[in-house]
Image (cartoon, rainbow, N blue to C red; front, side, top):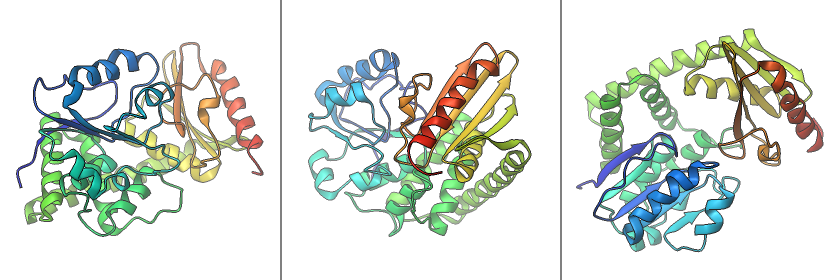
Length: 314
């Protein structure tokens, strides 16, 4: 089948210029946080007008969702209810939306499988696909990841971390096309396996860092401290290791006078947005920056510990 124009988005503040003509669908792309919503997301939506046929997402945004929740073009279901976006794509929805001429896709495993399911009229590309998306996008919530899902998600992580821009875009396009058609060529299978192998190597390295630099510094909080700003994949891996050791995982990255704190939790009963200093991201994944050293982040760590302890027994 002929695919629409595919545009892969790596973050909600980095939306490309909307096309000037044709129908558009957007899947698994969050509304930008804080002031970026008015500066990026809202102008994008307004520029498309009625040419926007679908915006499907599960990253809750109080301001934006309140504005668009009742608009039938928007399928907005919070992560606590939809652990991944593919489950929101039904045959009925695809009949209503039709085939968009341009499809904006969050460049991750969840986004790819959502796009594929939309293009397959609501049918997943393989039986475990919806559950695989939940397992990858909402770890620690009891979902099972198939061997196929693990390999594909690892390859996607490697593409995001190390492929040059043109190669990365080609890889995502070819992956969507192969899954839509349920046909992976031997050459593409080999490319996926090479990328997955590199991702497994990076995972092992991150686990070594966490063992050396991680500690339960406060009740309910496991902190990994590292020098230098890390790639998104490494930070995410370190956070997941932290979450596996406590109710809240934290990564603190120091680069000169700049210090970044990122917190995450598997626990759906904990809302990190309750801590004002943590801005951006989903309710289960938030960060803040300090220009005055780690000492200014200590109150945030204590608030995280209090939040973990207040939500039940550790």
